[in-house]
Length: 89
Image (cartoon, rainbow, N blue to C red; front, side, top):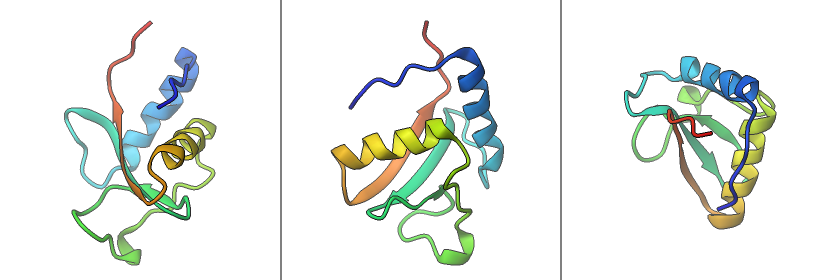
């Protein structure tokens, strides 16, 4: 998968996505689900997430949209994206 370089400001903006998580994850900044159509939402449940539990994240962040686009190139059917809390320089 392609490395996506962020400025500190962009990383701080991405960190805000963690606040959209239904239940915060200690190890991950954010856990996102994405399907084959590129629809993205915060991880809420294992397996199929019912539509009423999905919070649409489309257009929330340029970085998030880029992550989903790159992920789709690797895994077109969708799945989960785990965003690390680690910031490397």
